[in-house]
Length: 280
Image (spheres, rainbow, N blue to C red):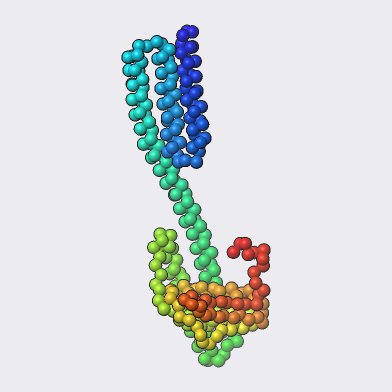
């Protein structure tokens, strides 16, 4: 019994020495990949076994030949164990990376869904606000001139078509998430885009007694997607009208500097409070 206790103690001390060395190695390699950590853990386990066997074999006064046979046998088993451990460690590391990428992809998709809801809600306000203003003007008899009534009817049809396009854009969500969205680029007269946007928001501006001011000429031609440009300009105008006090002015300007075109929508709402700027 005493001999067994001595054997156990000697093997335990040898294993503890290997374990301590492995713990130091893990600390030094804490920034490395999961595969390296798994390999070090396996090396600690195998090394502890090899060290224990070597110490006990030496203590048993085995012949050099027998000691060599024991060490070769244990070493062969250690090599196989480390090789198998390295292989499965790489697979576990790849699975962990894949799981992390899947979680990140799910977070991006969920954020895309939230952004889509906000985008659709924001974009639908533009034609709906104009349609409501024109419908109320026609219903209340504010507009009676046949030419103006015909223009309102035309704008209602145009805004209805625009809402239809917005609904159609929802079907592009899968293509956006897949990164397969392709814009149809062409030469777009920015003046025409601004003119249509002004016409679409004019009834809402008139209802709030807000003047819409834009230059009659000097508008550059840009390369872009006309529907998307119309959406951007329309939303800028709607926001400016919505937050400008009554009897205010919304001014639209554009120009070109070198190879870059610019467009600005200025209002008299006083700007964005400084406390809200970090949230933009």
